[in-house]
Image 1 (cartoon, one colour):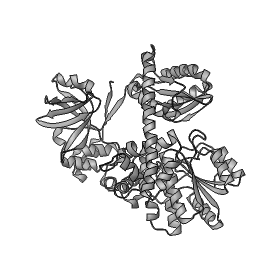
Image 2 (cartoon, one colour; image 1 turned 180 degrees about the vertical axis):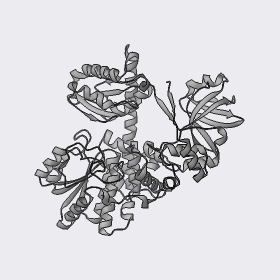
Image 3 (cartoon, one colour; image 1 turned 30 degrees about the vertical axis):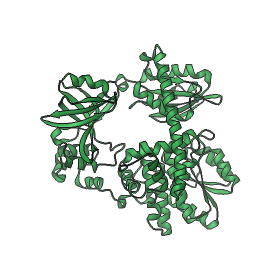
Image 4 (cartoon, one colour; image 1 turned 90 degrees about the horizontal axis):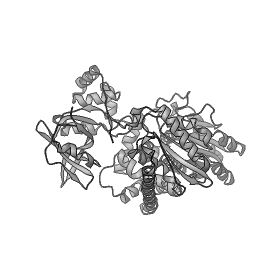
Length: 565
């Protein structure tokens, strides 16, 4: 698939000024300036995060009300229910908050809604469960900001809500006793990008301060916070960066039994990074809710006994194996459907539907299809009497607006710029697919249908040294708004030793001005003929370490290549 190369620029004046103060390679200074790190003090905070840099939780609107209501529940002997969503952010939020409060006050329980019986967020079944079991205070985490009617219903039953959320509020807010969400227009909290677990962490911090508890009472859950930050794809900037940095330290040095058990089952040997949390821990946790019941993910995280945690981890591991199998087989079926469609190549969208597909993986399948057919994609399946589906977008295209424009064909829909979900009647599938194609065709520009590679800087092989890589590594943890730097090197030649491995990957051996590097290009075998032409090429890559037979060397991880102009 052809890709667009977009090479970022940075102010030369700021880059030079930063280089004068940091005395490091100008390529690194350019990347830092692009990321808003343009003076010595910002660089110091960036490279040396401190927990003391975290903002006071009391700056968050309603924090005093939330703390007061919880302390009142303690004093009056009320029953407290910690409620959260079924994904990684929700289950880690609930696990940390439940353990924190339960450690102070025993009359506490937790509740995770069932993905298919109750749906996303605060549920009527959950509120009814609270009423039947005598709970009078619900702390909702990673959900609740849009649950106006349900929280109003809870009030009629004598149940108060404290909402801890990070999703964008609507104009009408729920009638909760306290709403902790930095995205509220009138909330003075300086950092707006916390995930749900991060907001919960702030509430725990405030409670600990109020009750005079040691810092460890809430810092103990930093590994769960880091897992949520990684999985929820929030920006790795500001407070998230500090929380992820220290959370990863805890994951590597002293993780909770649940994370330790998942690492054991995944065969983790090396140090964990954000990418490991995203690709090793998160899919196993999410699989619980996708394939069965996410309650066991919370049970995994709160279990202190390692052997018992391992038993829960094995359940999640098994759910994930089932998820992978479903995901793989459905993706193959969907690709075959597209290949059989004579009009597929002329379309700007993909909409596929089969009644028997597993509802829990249609969103993943949509993302997989975009890897082959790069265009807004919807995957639909039968759910009871209705058709339900998930949509995924390509970078830069507002998917939600396109679906909103086709709402006359739908029973319900929701989502955001890049992803959405919808329900519709089976007889409406064809008309919806047609309307969606028409709308996207009207709005999307041709360049958005070509994947873009963001390149941070041009670099020469002579710059790629152990000391350069050492500073690069200190830019971790990587993630949104602080991605692993991507480089371009121009007029590189093949040494003749590059080869195809395992039929689909390339093991590169390349040189530039007599300096050679090896590299690996996964699923790039189709590019091998370019190397055989023996012409200079431009390569796009990241840099990482390769350990082989006890020897550590730097290698290039290829992203794309083309013949030099």
